[in-house]
Amino acid sequence: MNILDTFRARYLFEDTTSSELQKALDKPLTVYAGFDPTNDSLQAGNFVTIMALAHLQRAGHKVIALVGGATGLIGDPSGKSKERNLLSAEQVEKNLEGIKENLSRFIDFDPASPNPAIMVNNYDWFKDITFIDLLRDVGRYFRMGVMLSKDSVKTRLESDDGMSFTEFCYQILQGYDFLHLYKTYGCTMQIGGSDQWGNITAGTELVRRVLGQEVYGMTFPLVCDSTGKKFGKSEGNAIFLDARKTSVYDFYQFFLRAMDADVIRYLKIFTFLSMERIAELEQAVATAPEKREAQQVLAEELTRAVHGEQGLLTARKTTEVLFGGSIEGLPAALVETIFANVPSATVPKETLLGKPLFEVIAQAGMMTSKGEAKRLVQQGGLSLNSLKVAGLERVFEESDLIEGRLAVLRSGKKNFFLLKV
Image (cartoon, one colour):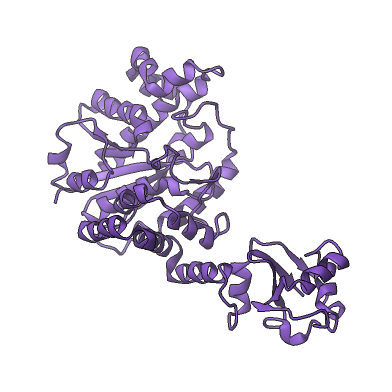
């Protein structure tokens, strides 16, 4: 199956700069996609680009992940209503390392592999180009009318903030990336989201004007859910691939909460499951939506891909515990991971042992006063390590500590508190 047919079947194709692309993809091509280094972790919104590169690599094409160390210092205006805050070179370098780690979970960069991907940083070739060089050797191939006609430019020019000359030049820099990669690696194709069309065509046109060679661009749709909300956002927050920014539990839950109207499309875009298996899950959504089998598979596939088998186990266990399961037998390290985002306090052990539990929770700050803590216990609303606290006479003991250092308190059904000693 031609990779372009795969892209069409999986909602990974929107447009191309050439009707000859499908024929060209019958042979191995070198393809690149760019990643913006504005953060030290990629987000769920980057999954489309990542999956497209991964499909290409699996189909035998050579893939290049370009991280914009130079263009990241300027900021891509595409899809933005305001100019970005400019990053320092040091911050960009830090972000590059995080992005490389994220990508390596999906794309094979191992030089010993039969078809290894490579990562490049466009700062490496831009750092020695002077402004005069850029104007003389690159800028003369760009026409103002074409540049002004780009949707990303027109939208910004019509906005209240307008567009700076810095941002206006972005398409020149990205166009030059394509020219450089063609000359250096024989790269003949660039992929990106539909909002990158203007930047991609800037590159294909530059290669044609300078070298007289045809190269290809392909875009895929920007993914939104069935309500029109941009994919990868959860209550206003981005879903990161780094567990330090988005916990494995929150990552897992984000996909588990996918709506029935979206889940099959997400399975096609974001997983390598066969189309036959996805068709089975589509049938399950139609006949037994209450079981949420498709959502379960989606959450498991993506959590495993991003966080590994251990991360998936942690997400599952966290889900079980937070929805009423027991923590009995769990190691302290896992308990700490599960409850990393709940309120907590660290208290000297000797001030707790032998004290009534209602005094302990007041001292730790779980409750605002001893009176409030006492009422909670009297009403049967306090649990310690998943077990109900029976009465006011119950005291805190050494055996209540998990591995001698943690205890999990809960008021009501879901109000957890982590006590550290």
